[in-house]
Amino acid sequence: MAVSRSGFSSRMGFIMAAAGSAVGLGNIWGFPTQTASNGGAAFVLVYLVLAFCLAYPAFMAELLIGRYGQANAVTSLQKMSKTLWQKRFAFLVGFGGIICAALILSFYGIIAGWMMSYAIEPVLKLASFETGASWVVTHSLTRNLMFTSLFMLATIFIIRHGVENGIEKWSKRLMPLLIVLLVLLSSYVFTLEGASAGLDAYLNPDISSILDPNLLISALGQAFFSLSLGTSVMVIYGSYISKKENLVTLGAQVTLIDVSIAFLAGLLIIPAMYVAQAQGVTIFAEDGSLVSGSSLVFTILPTLFQSMGDVGLFVAFAFFVLMSIAALTSSISMLEGPVSYAVERHNLKRETATTIIGLIILAFSMVIVFNLSFMLDLVAIISTQYGQPIVAMLCCVFVGWIWHRNDVLAEIKEGNSDVEHSVFWKIWPWYTKFVCPTAIAVVFIHSL
Ligand code: PFF
Image (cartoon, rainbow, N blue to C red; front, side, top):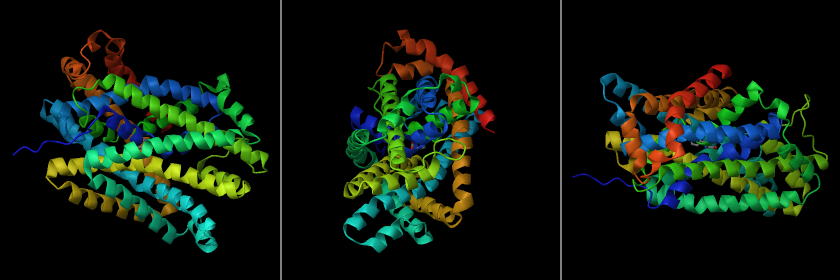
């Protein structure tokens, strides 16, 4: 008996889930950090252009592959393939994306665990449990193992409940909360001394640095990471969308939300850094660049929160809860990639597949935790700087060169019957065929 496949129950459900995947630590931490280390507003400008001109077309390619195939990444890509070598190639690309998602989750879960531990610190302080409060924010093996496991268990819990009752339900709850927290926090930071200098640095571009190759590479990498491309995630989310929906607008809406939230996060973090400076915290490194990376989130911002007295405890709590939520709605999408594959290709029950795969990824996270200083960066670089661009590029190659143009059109026409006469259809096929793969390859080769 054929079992009907589950999917998102509504358009809003898809938007929240896909935006939940896209909006994560990459937006709230990565984007402001990259902005800080790449000359401020010039980076913002380039990022906006690249997100819409390159990441969005590639995002559309992945969504379309999934909705056409109505299955996990491997099966969907194989449905588009006609010859044996195409099917083998499809397997490599689809499975490559799934491995990439699992690798990203293995290091993302560790960082998300830190966010959770920093969210608990102010609560312990309020409860006058000082020893516990300092333990949760001090690097130790036990602390890292404990919080990585907690975070992974939350991810497994949601994915075990499936698409509608897990991913969709939790994304619909958590995403609005994330937006409210972000707006409240940035409005509060604007009222503090020093914030306007931060706004100036964030919003006034230095046009001369716009064509700096390093800036272009960082901006494109950030845009691809942010839209979760090259990981099989958007293929599987695409497969859960109804054929009645207009994919072109849905994709654009998700891109817009993703970019807006990154922009909003910049409005919080960069002014917050300058507020910290007004309070005597050093925010510039020796070479004159703004401090970025982990010291920004785990040193500068906590110092700022501390200087606010008791209010700071609430602000710190809100900030790190915000980070944890953003991470959770992304991590569930990363786990869904491998789980959907195991369920559909190997006939495993969803609950069993989720627990087994979740625990394997957690075990790998633990290996990273034991070798943090060299493995964390290594796994992040392999998966995000190599894996994601290669898989994303090959997905574009699939849509542009292997999938027949008339079949592509037929799929986009579902839910969007006039698309043939739209600007989208005049530009996008060429973009996916030539511009996206070339641009990704150029950026990739450059980054080597
Ligand atoms: N887009 C997420 C972020 O910006 O934090 C990260 C991410 C999610 C990457 C899902 C890859 C993925 F499959």
